[in-house]
Amino acid sequence: MHTAWQTILLAITTANLVALLLQNRRLRTALATARHEADHDPLTGLPNRRALVRHLNALLADRTRPVSVALLDLNDFKAINDQHGHAAGDSLLIHVADTLTALDLPAAYIGRMSGDEFLIITDGGERTSRENATAAADALDRSTLAIFGEPVNCRASIGLAIADHGTRTASDLLTRADAAMYDAKRHGTAVQVWHHTTATTATKAATSRRRYR
Image (cartoon, rainbow, N blue to C red; front, top):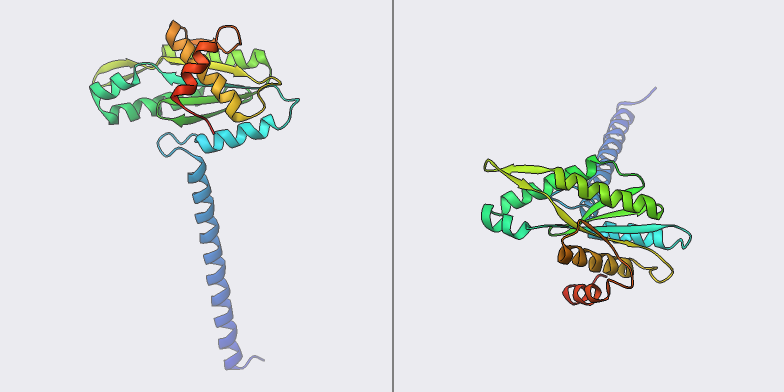
């Protein structure tokens, strides 16, 4: 039979154990939240640049994998921001993120790089990569968002780069995709695939604009 003192000790021990379990649960929740916030864009909820580059490097580590990236840059985004304000620009970015996610592209990992740039990483062959880029371009071309009662288009220029033996890092592949995207803007095409013969000028121009790490 428990004495009164033993009963009190048991109650205190139980209470302390419950408190520790609750604290542990709160810490796990806080850690999961911190990890999620570190890897996701706070505006769109998509994976951010850090998560995208990490995922891409992991795929490229396997040299047998057919990997590609499609870099999307919205057309006339600055003009939309200037005309309607940054809140309208944010609404457009969220709309674009929702549009891309709703496509449910096969073997694709979609995120926001920065500003008005989004990235589609395709862990599949060249055909799937091209189809994903084309589907994204077509969906955005058809999509509009009403801002202050005025329909605003979501068209984008897309640069597609497909990994080969010369592109085995995220930096290599993203630089090529950036060059192809710049070329698409220059020629007014929706999707431009990077290749050696036509992208030399675009590569130099794109490299001067940014460096990927």
